[in-house]
Image (tube, rainbow, N blue to C red; front, side, top):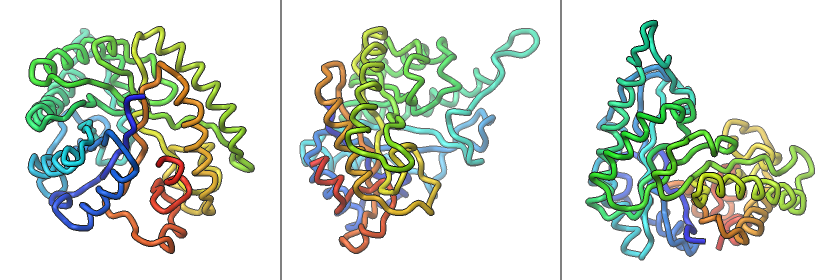
Length: 316
């Protein structure tokens, strides 16, 4: 299993990587014994139907910010996956960025404009990744509606390979692993592995293991069909009751805290997936840039953080 990784700092603001608080949090994350870290860089488009992805100097990471994060990882012999992402300012999930496939005379106007902007966006970070020696580049995250546009994706990949020489992966969503027909041109197939393996009430480690075995059998068949090993580019579970049945959830803030259920989620997937030779590893989601410092704070936290919780010992 190549990738023992974590995603660090989703939503990091400019300048944050130079502060002692974030540097300390970054080092605590790497102290888990990681050999990879994923650095996400998210830009924004105004709505799900906008064709331009924009950079905002007030909120978006500069080259210097990314350089700092990469250098901190490399200083500890940890490899880096740079992960450019796009979000919608209207709150719509990026999977729903979508346009008609053509007008009444077959002209693909909107997708053409959007992919022109998206390709420029990805190429910029591909050049950053090459310059900074990032060992892997993720070409997109959960862009489900766009995955059918095979021609545009293949053209984008060809452009990226002209400027970047490291490994390439794409991050689809759980249940959609075969939608992107163009992953044959990449090194790995990635997925956000938020599979329902627990129960809303009475989730157990044994029950989760049983469901992960079924998930693993299914993914093994997909790996064989597409000819690529699989990485869980995102995977995690909040320390809240019932979240193993909806591990993607971040919205239900009223759920009671359940540190054991979170730990069982992590232990179950590690037990099952570590035995599969087609599986290349994890990037756990996610470690906060300003993680809490005390057990008292951890005992109140119901987010994805595992610091000072039972799941942290499982991952170590």
